[in-house]
Image 1: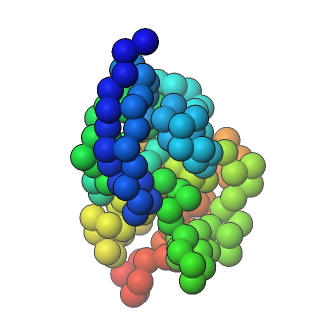
Image 2: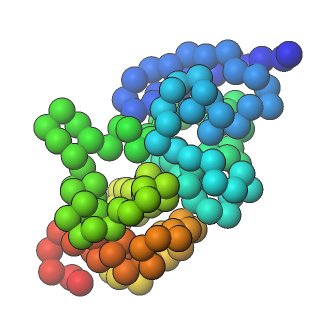
Length: 157
């Protein structure tokens, strides 16, 4: 089997790996790095369960070749919290009961995180657009949108 050597940052830590040439980023994240937050729902980029943030942008890890991570900064849901506690988005998801089965939650969090990194005070329409690629079969989305809105600083809602 042919491999590719890649070096990148994952959740603030430098990583160097030899990965199978055809491996997806999701396979490497889950199987080689042991980070199980990102899920494979559909495998074709339709559900958003595998969303991670690469160089500040939300991407579907199932569509990204692992080799494309070379030289990048990768953030997974495991990297959101810090020693001081949960990320405000995580806190608001809990507070507003936006987590039910939890399968979609990591992807929703990462899509929201990328939005906040791009725009500090997004409006409701921008939040809805940012998570449009994240399918949820449990919540009906209202709690998710409300939780993300609650994490927006200020009174622009």
